[in-house]
Image (cartoon, rainbow, N blue to C red; front, side, top):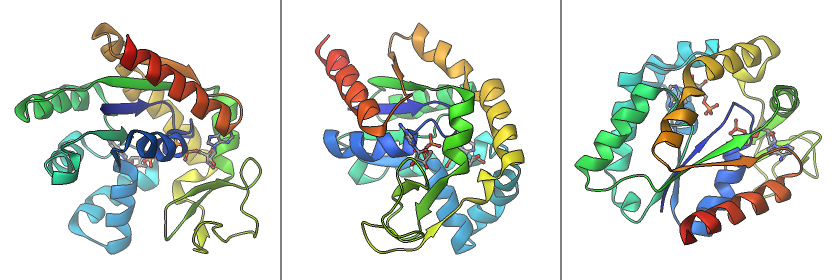
Length: 218
Ligand code: ADP
Ligand code: AMP
C-alpha cells in the first residue's frame, strides 16, 4: 500500500499516520520530522531548511523532492509507505509521480483529513512532541500523565518553534495557497478519499480505517 496523508497543519496527519502505518505495516515517512532531525543535528540539509521552517514557509521543492527521492530509494520502502507532509505543492506531486514511475510503481490512495481552521489552531497551540520517540501529545486533548514527560518512553516533550500563533496563521495561508490544490489534483486521478477529521482521535482513526477498507475493497 502506497499512501499519502494530506490536510492542513494540525489536522492530525502525524497522529493518524502513527496508527495507520502500523496497522498497514508500512513505513511512515514524515518530511517535517526528517527536516527537524536535520535541523537539530546541524546537517547541511538542516541549515538549508531552517529559515523556511522558522518562518512557516515551505522548503523549496528541489531540496524537498531530492530528500524524498533518496528516502524512497531505501529498502524498507519496497513493500509500501505512508507519506505524511509530502507532497505539499502540485509540482511536488508531479515529481512524486515521476519518481514512483521510475521505480515501477504508483500511489494507491491519498487521504485528506478535513478539519475546521479554528480546530487546527486549538490543536497546534497545545501540541507537544516527544524528543525521543516522536509521539505526539496535546496538553488538553491528549495530555501525558505527567506534564512534559512522554508516557511511552519517559522522553522530554517539547513545543515546536513553528507552533506560535503568528506562524500558525501563516502556515494555514501557505496551506490554502500551495497545498490545498492537491485535493483537486488527486481527485482527478480518482485516488482521493476525504474523511471528517473533527472529533476525538479514536473516532478519526476508525473513520480512516473504514475509508481505507472501502477503498482497497472497491
Ligand atoms: P499534523 O501532523 O497534521 O500537523 P498532528 O498529528 O501533529 O497534526 O496533531 C496536531 C495536534 O492535535 C497534536 O497535539 C495532537 O495531539 C492533536 N490532535 C490530533 N488529532 C486530534 C483529534 N482528533 N482531536 C484532538 N486533538 C488532536
Ligand atoms: P510539518 O511537520 O509537516 O508541519 O512540517 C514542518 C515544516 O517543514 C513545514 O512548515 C515546512 O517548512 C517544512 N516541510 C515539511 N514538509 C515539506 C514539504 N513537503 N515541502 C516543503 N516544506 C516542507
